[in-house]
Length: 177
Image (spheres, rainbow, N blue to C red):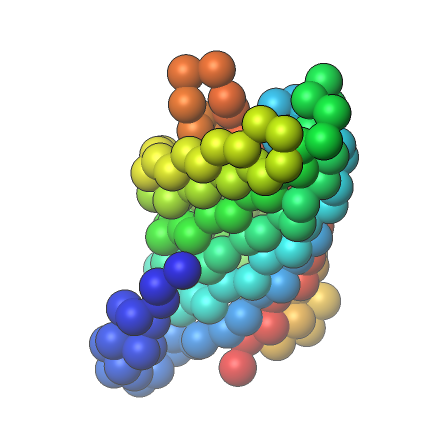
């Protein structure tokens, strides 16, 4: 997994600090559904991302993110002796809408779109490896607890292959510096 552009993105974001932009981290748990659940036997995953939060108005915020998710090896349903792990590296753009027009406190809706690099690796009886870059979308709700801490839950969708779609839920927290 290469994250070489990360230092350059952070350096490029520094001038935004004068425009009320904030850099932050997002950590979340990932609950796979459908195809991902079958591949990993429902094994939960973890994710981490870095973001730059750019206020557009009192009610709208854009949040470009770069992150990664990992679902550890789990027994593949229907394939005895095969364990599968799933990882992704994402470059997404989140749009946050605060109906109360206060981005420092209160509920919000979040929508995301971007590119995801998926890797599905199986070991054991039926080994295989698949890698694909696909469109990813997500949407959900959040609550900005304080000026620095927010919590959110999102559903996500991304096609990996013709017969394999990544769907699931993420629940996590975002910290703005």
